[in-house]
Length: 332
Image (cartoon, rainbow, N blue to C red; front, side, top):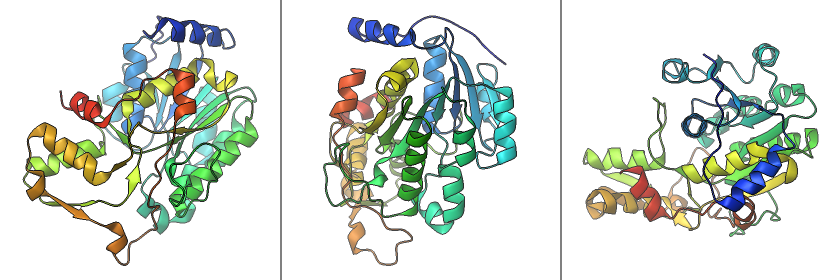
């Protein structure tokens, strides 16, 4: 079912004044199409727009998650599609004429990408979707920190992209496509590992926080990588940054941005933070493992892809959430 609602999100006075100015360059009621809407970030983004009564016409494109329609169908207009299918894309764009595309859909498992590079490229760089959009459509692409090779951290936006696995290569290809097709109204957000609370609806995969919590709650001993470093970012910070670009920022400040949290973190440190907050015995349940010591891994992985995200934070005025704060908010 389609729902049209209008109000404005709460934010700082300066932020509101600026984003109001951005809206002047947009249609009175932008039509926003979110792909990958049934995923972890997609569900949090949809829920945010619904709760804030965003002044948009909202459409959600999703893949095969059977529960998604029953969880969100009464709140937004939902479209089941295969993002790599030309016929499905043409049918979708025949029904929806977006003024903003938030492209979250992806095959995000590096192992799965490495196993089937062609499928990964077709999903992660959907040429037909991007090239079939009308000329003035704003595009917000969720990219990845895995476009970096892991040898030159911390990475800035000006750092060279040199992905070492198929996943990173396919996302970099999509970045180049998006910036070629819509150089004046597109942004590519190189996201780190996204963490946060459970999704508002049922989801096939939650964040790393839930993985850690479920394992330790069951008393299961788990090997955790101790030598891979990222700038894990809180999901609601990501949502607010995307919202800023939806509200006109993609047109006023197009480009490529790093999107990470305020700390350099290993997965072990994240798991230990969950254990500390939930009262689990981290020493007994978490086994530090150096990925570099393992043989015959199914895909290459960058060692340290921590990033500086100061440009994005300065634009959006989002105050980055620390790991401790993110864990506390996720299990309140």
